[in-house]
Image (cartoon, rainbow, N blue to C red):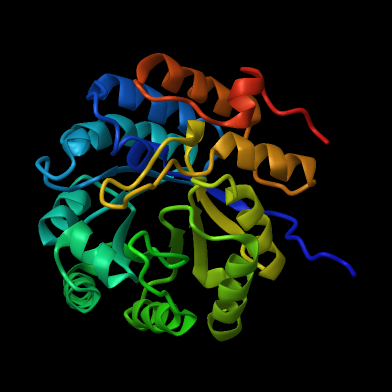
Length: 307
């Protein structure tokens, strides 16, 4: 039986936000800027560069405005859209003032996780998001992120019907995309395949971005499962950095260089320059106090070999 695979995928780099947010030691602003500028030259079309959140909640993101101001010229020159996460109206206003291109607002499908994360029920967060889109949607693109869509760290059952209902909510508000996140890396290829097949049958492949964590070493397998049903947009973090501060057991994102290597070996186009990406990973290794856990970075500092 023939296996469907896309000819081309989009990789969206999220290390500067999701990769850095959980790191205890403060990363100097100039180091963040240098890493983002290096990543911008690797060929990404979108990059999540920061989050506009309270410094009390996520101290690592306290320099969001300074980072954004320092990298926007490079992003524009390289044709990279700047994405940022926002939790509220103040964050949206700050991001818009800084020239961000797209905002992500995350709501957990899991009630327990949403309460731990933002101290609201998912329904309350949905109402808040609706207000943000109605107020600022004419100024900037919004994207809805659905955390814990493939499993809850607190054992709560996550149904496909619930994920579909929240997806419809976001699309009906005018979001072009919905991000489906395996926030704690609890999914497996069968679960990923079944959920995404059901969602694609209702809404189409173009609507979805996958965000997979590698807690149990299954992120690449889940990536393949998602591609088999037609998904062709994936978030990943250089070096495999990341983890949700409010999700017990959440490990890092799937490493961009590992995803790129797999795509290259499979003959799938990404538009990413592996050598430039590995230069950025080297900068992260030098300047960020966090373990680089990707297979490609451990194997060698160079680029993946073409198939």
